[in-house]
Image (cartoon, rainbow, N blue to C red; front, side, top):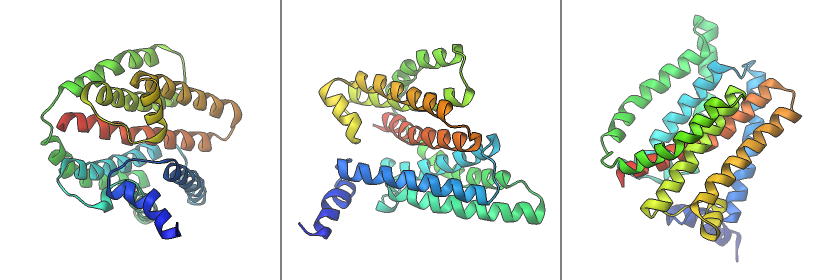
Length: 258
């Protein structure tokens, strides 16, 4: 098998034929995320940007914009391979770097804090896509079930004494797990990711929820215990949250249009 055949089998066909993920592309994407995370953190250090609440809100607005654009394909509003995973997130990563550079220039030139520029741009760009996507929602039972499943987890997180950022990261992945469980268990969806697919097919959809929560909580505890760099900790937790938010919003939205 030639290199071109390998690329077609493991990378292109899963995208073009909507086959989902396999071990090869999953491992590749995981490595890319790790490298991109490290490079992004070094870039932020060079730009002297603190990983604080303002930065997190700015980045989440970018993630929200990217997710909306990604959902255009799912809703049939605009169909293109350029807005499916992984391409949309490569594009959003590049866009994030560019807008951070521009916002820092604006901050230096006009004394407008960089995060305000990012938020303003993302809100402006997100408004029409959000309205178009909301207009497509006609089914609410799946969304209601997801929120019902999420409710006890949300209550537990509210009651336990833990760092706020850890609670929010856990909530993001709980939302993803709840939406996935609802979609697979009650509406006949199939899971596209390798590990969740293995868990669901060999055990049950509920096993995915349990394992995901255990892993996320465990990783957060390890970060808090073994890393003393506050900025790096916050950035790492933000990346983990993003990995949950994107799929969660996608699955939740699909329940509303299916």
